[in-house]
Length: 540
Image (cartoon, rainbow, N blue to C red; front, side):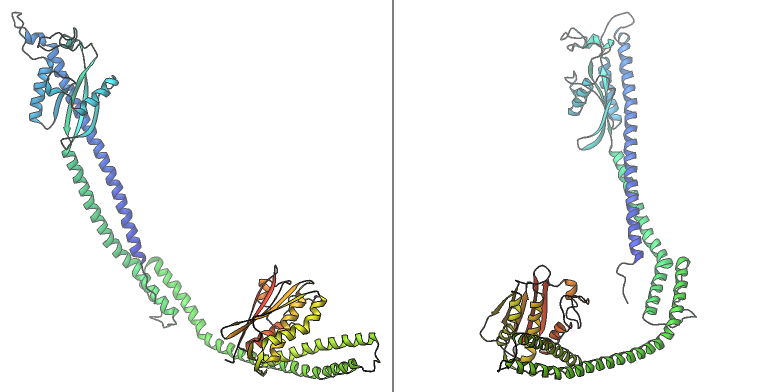
C-alpha cells in the first residue's frame, strides 16, 4: 500500500500558518508605522505649542523693556532682563525640570550656550534659503539617543533693532556689538529637543505583544485547525483510501452490509456512498467475470488450434505443390540443356534464343518454387541444415559471377570487397548461397541503370559480417518495419514494376536465424540500402 509523503492536512495547515504570519507581519508593520507617524505628529504639535509659548514670553519681555528698566521716578537702570537673557534663563529651568531641551540657536551667537550645533546649522541654512518656511523638524540622534528635533525661525522684529540693528559693530545697552540686522532678517531659530526613547520602548512593547499574539494564534491554528481537519477530513479520507485500495486489491467482503464502511460527514459521506454503489456494481460484474474468462479462454484455444491446423495444412499444401511442380520443371530444364548441346547444329539461331529464354524462365521458376518449399519447411519447423566448413568468399564470387550478366545488361557496376582470401564458417553452403542470391538479385532489381552494388565480408571476433549495398531506390522507415514479412512487397499492386512472390527477404531472415545469425537493414530513399548479415564462424 502506498504511503502519502506529505498529507494534505499538513500542507493546508502549513500554508495557512504562512498566510497568517504574513498578514500579521504586514499588519504589525502598518501599525508600527502609523504609531510612529502619530507620535511624530504629536511631538511636532507639542513642540509647536512650546515654541509659541516661548516666543510669546520673548515678545512680552520685549514690549515691557521700558517698564523693566525705568523706575517710578523715570530713572533708567538696565536690569539685564532682555528677551534673549530671559529666554536663556527659562530654557535652563525648563531643561532641569523636563527631558526636553530648548535653545535659542544661532550662528556666532552672543551666548556660547546658544551656538548652533551641526544639525541646527544645516537647518538654519535651509530656513535662510526659504524664508517662507515656518518650521523644520526631523528625527536624529544626540549622543547615541533618539531625539525629535524641532526648529522655529526667529526673525528680527522692530523691538529687536535697538540691540541687533544698525549701526553694525556699535555696542548695545548690554555691551554687545550690534549685528546690523534689518527687520525680517533671520537671526536664528528656537531649537527644541524631544527625547524619543520612551516612544521606541512603546514600539518595542507593541512589537513583542504582536509577536506573542502571532505565536499564540499560530499555535492555536496548528493544534486547533489540524485537530479539526484530522477529525472531519483527514481521518475519513485516509480510511476511505485504505478501504478503496483493499477493494482494488480484490477484497470484496462486505462490512455491515457495505463494501466500504467509513464514518464521515458531508461531502465525504456522499463520496463514500458513491464508492459503495460502484463497488456493488463491480462485485456483481466480478462474480460472472471468471466464468466469462474461462469461456473466452476455451474459445481462444479452439480458435488457436484451428489456426495452427490451417497453417499446417497450408504449409503442407505449399510443400506438396512445390514438390509436384519441381519434378516436371526439373525435366524441362534437363531437356533444355540436352537440346542446347545440339552437336549436329540442327537448331536455328532463333530456336537457340527461344530455348535460352525457356531455360532462364524455368530457372527463375525453379528458384521461386525452391523458395516456397524452403519457406514452408521453415515455417513448419522441418527445414534441416546440412552444415559444413565453407569458404564464404567463394560463395560470394559464385553468386557474383552468376548474376553479373544481368547486372551488365543494366550497366550496373558490381564491386566485391573481400578482406581475406578465405573466410571459413560452419554453415549450409546451399542455404547461404540462396541468401546471397536473394540479396544480390534484389539489389540488381531495384538499382537503376548505371548504378553501383557493393558486396563484401569482414570478420569480427567470432562472427563474420556479410554486406550487400546498393545506391538504388532505398526503403522508407515505414516500409522497413514490414519488409521482412512474408508475401510483402513494396509495391503490392497488380501493375507493379517488379515481379516476385514476396517471400525472398522473409526466407532470407528465416535462413539467417536458422544459422544463429542476424540480419540488419539500413536504408534511405536518398542514398539506397545496405543489408548486413552476421553469422557465427563456428557452430554455437
